[in-house]
Amino acid sequence: MKKVALTVSVLALGLAACETQTEEAMENDMAVAGEAVDNAADEADMMADNAMDAMEGAAAEAAAETDAAAAEVEAEVEGEM
Image 1 (cartoon, rainbow, N blue to C red):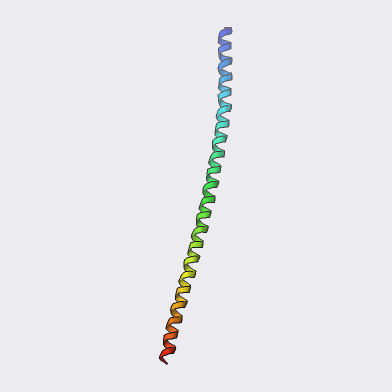
Image 2 (image 1 turned 45 degrees about the vertical axis):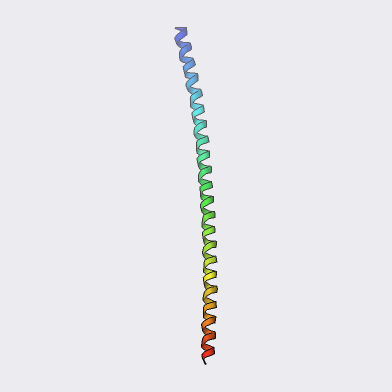
């Protein structure tokens, strides 16, 4: 009878220890997942900023080319008069 009680006690302690480790592992996994989500959001934000910078640069370049072309046309029109 004592052996059975001892075996049950040892198994109960082992189960309790496993449960604690499982909870800690789950908390660690959640922390890692949360950090991964934060990193992905930061990277997406950075990529969006880079895309906006590139679009602004392309728009400025296109505006400069348009202004230059307009100046050429204006100079040609003035030259014909």
